[in-house]
Amino acid sequence: MKKITTVFILLLLVTGIVFAISKSVNKEEKKEIIVTNTKEKPLNKVNDTISIIGVGDMMLGTNYPSTQYLPPNDGKDILSPVKDILINANVTFGNLEGSVLDSGGSPKNCKDPSKCYVFRMPTRYVNYLKEAGFDVVSNANNHAGDFGDVGRTSTMNTLKNAGLHYAGQTSMPYTTFEIDGIKYGFCAFAPNSGTIDMRDIDNAKNIVKHLDSISDIVIVSFHGGAEGATHRNVTRKTEIFLGEDRGNVYVFSHALIDAGADVIFGHGPHITRAIELYKNRFIAYSLGNFCTYARFSLSGYAGVAPIIKVFVTKTGEFIKGQIFAIKQPGEGGPIIDNSNKVIKEIIELTTADFPETELLIKETGEITKK
Image 1: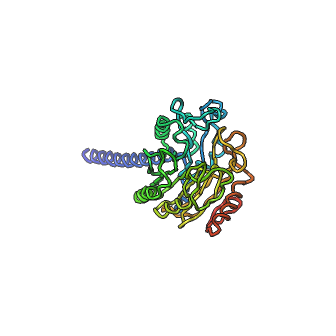
Image 2 (image 1 turned 60 degrees about the vertical axis):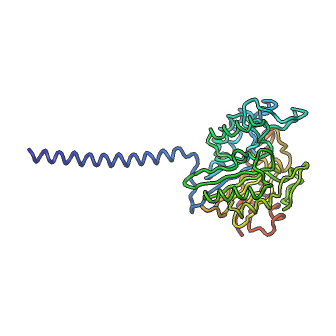
Image 3 (image 1 turned 90 degrees about the horizontal axis):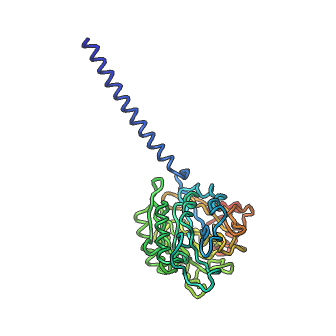
């Protein structure tokens, strides 16, 4: 009887150990499933590369001066035609034009409100950006202060609550975040009031050096350069537009890569500009108008833009890239442009502005090193 009891106890102990191990394994499996399910984007770890998408100006619709400037279906579908591209990257970035605010604020003074280009995007629209795959945005531009400090504060609070990273205002010059075990540093610059001034290159370099010391990959956004179809080229000089110093985007970009930046996305001219590789780091000098509903001119080159996907190493060195061509017909909102007009434009401008370039751009949009 004693022997049977001993065997019974041993069986209970073994069963308990097996149950505990099984529970531990199941717990670990459950934890992995949770991580996978909460990850909105597919991992892109082929050959240990990191994929980063950059797009241009984003203003999905404004309720000022009238709600007639909001898109159909309240903007819920405006990014749907390109969502499959945007969501398929480790990091997706865009330049956010205007304030994110439902009502109120102090709009910039203008003589004719019907022609006043100040933007107040409803706070719920930030969810559309998040759902489309965006991770980080710049709010360093000339429209960030369209509704004063109330607008600035609402914009930053709304982005934060939605889980979108941002930088560019004097109160938030840079940010860091981690995705898939890679730590990113992000900073944004513009020559406008309330933003981190891109013309103060020494200060910009100090910010980038700090980010480089605490991050694996440093992404920089700038809003600079003269505007419009007559300013398609990177002049390598200080650009003046409407009497305003819009910076020297060439000197700025090279200086920040020297300081530790890995990928630089430019905005401001409202048309697309050339791309460049400097010290094996990628620069896009202007990504044009990506999603700008109703209040932007979309004629000619202003109506086409790239989605640029850059593949880099875990230390930020360029591997390859891909340009997806989009256009904004009617009042705006991106759709795929099968004519690839903007790819042809980037090839032409890059050949003209950077004849020494190490980049080879195919008409299919593929970017490689020569």
